[in-house]
Image (tube, rainbow, N blue to C red):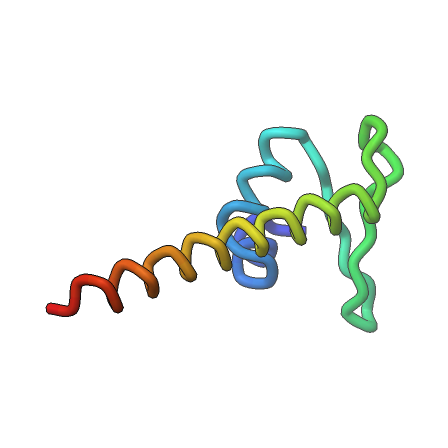
Length: 74
């Protein structure tokens, strides 16, 4: 799958993770994603766990920004 499609679907951080770990995602004709069997030891479940961790990190950053904004309104 093209890295641009990964970025559009999952976001930049996940795209960078895939590139760094040489993970090749493939999308079937129904739109489902799978990890290419030629990859090291990564499974799609591993990728989903990383993706969920990234989402949690982003949510925490957003919550922190909201707290800062409510404490120090401009």
